Image 1 (cartoon, rainbow, N blue to C red):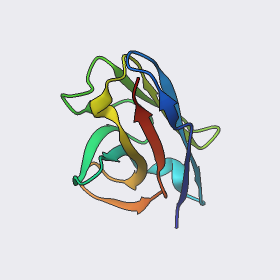
Image 2 (cartoon, rainbow, N blue to C red; image 1 turned 90 degrees about the vertical axis):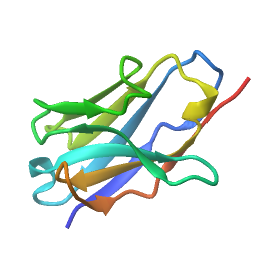
Image 3 (cartoon, one colour; image 1 turned 90 degrees about the horizontal axis):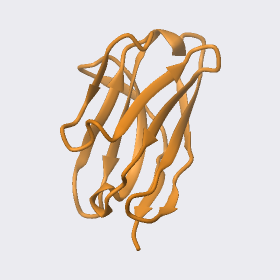
Image 4 (cartoon, one colour; image 1 turned 45 degrees about the vertical axis):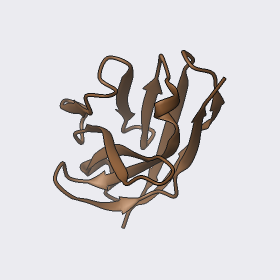
Length: 117
C-alpha cells in the first residue's frame, strides 16, 4: 500500500512558476514509477509527466514539454513537478500517482493550481 499527499498548489499569474510536491509513504514506495496528472474543470483527467522508479526515464505530455520538469528524491520519498511559464490552460487539480508507466494503482487527493491574471 502506498499513500500519496500532494502540496504546493495555489494561484499564480500567467508566466509564473510553481513547484508541486508529492510525499509518498509505504514500505515499497520507492520501487514504483510515479506520475502527475491534471484535471481541468469539466474535462477528463490527463497525463502530465512521469518518472521511473530511479528517475532515469521521464515522459512528458506535449503540452508541457520544455516548461515542466518532473523529478524525485527517493531518500525523501518525494516527487516534484517544477512548472515554469505557466499558462491559463494549465489550470486544474493536479494529482500524483504511483504504479507503472502503463497502470497507476495509487492516487493522491490532488492540489489545485489556478493560473490567472
